Image (cartoon, each protein chain N blue to C red):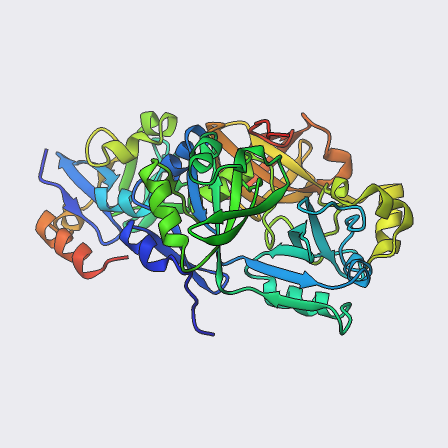
Length: 364
Length: 126
């Protein structure tokens, strides 16, 4: 398959981006200033991220559309208000996570933001449940820009009045340069911010404005350190088809009504897991010293039994310490439990830690 | 102190009598990005030419640091283990990685000069 590029590819190049192949796209991993500075400027001012590789999947249909989607998504879509968003998943028959996603109710149906690496398969999986009168399209004429950080609201409000009124996990239509934009207050960094769906034709103009307001470009490198500090999962690492939402410690994302009534893929399995707990569970991990426990690092109990593995690990620039996430046997998941991490053949101490590592309050 | 010599794996070496000081080059730090963890060897450890001797990690990934020269470690630079970021600021100065007592000066002589190394980096961009 030919490597794909987002509409901003040349723009990134001019900003001094270093590119890496990611999910079939050439994406910036970092720009000139490097991951730590990009991370810090997002936390202290604002940063923008080109996430146009992600799928923007639009669905339209009558009330049967909700019924169809609820077979594979365990959110309460019936009671989701227009312009409100939920974090949820696509589930397989075993309750495993096919992808994690944000679903927003629109005037005509739903918009689902899908992970780039999963989007083609996701659409196949969703389509199995759709009826003939349900229309769907993966929109390739739209870019998706995340603007994240404490100054985001002030900067975006000057350009697009009204965005300051959005609450966290809600969205709306706005006008910019004579075109319609859909903006949600959401993100993947633990900061206040927005995700802006904008036509490929207008996206450079928006970025020009952001840069003129000292919003720094941020690559995938800092996106990863930011989301990990915020305790957020990365699909393909912390989540996959063999992991279910109970194990992933994401049962909060299954709607209360759906937990009671079920009716979605893997419900039998998840019902039993909700009642009995799971054997392993996702936890936060803090190494005691400076050692970084990266993905696949083995986790041992203090008496040297292997109890799990790391799924994401890096140095957290805002925490100023290494941070990680992983899966351990549930009996070792209590906050503060001492563990050992095997790095390059040596065991280093660590502790099960609360998530997120970095706390920030969203605008609610 | 002798002139600095360079390896293809982006380490530098300087020699003072039979004690060599080894670090990673400015070019290496630019490729690595922000350095957030360093592990240096303890005194007494024997290292082979091109053998693994230390570890450096950036926000992106972990990399091994090889010794361009054989010998016995006399000192690891604890200051960079405590402050890994200092490697980015002065890689070819105060932020050396380790010192070792060498066995064969011929190994030092066979490394690249500054000019040869700069040319090597230009021809092998990564």
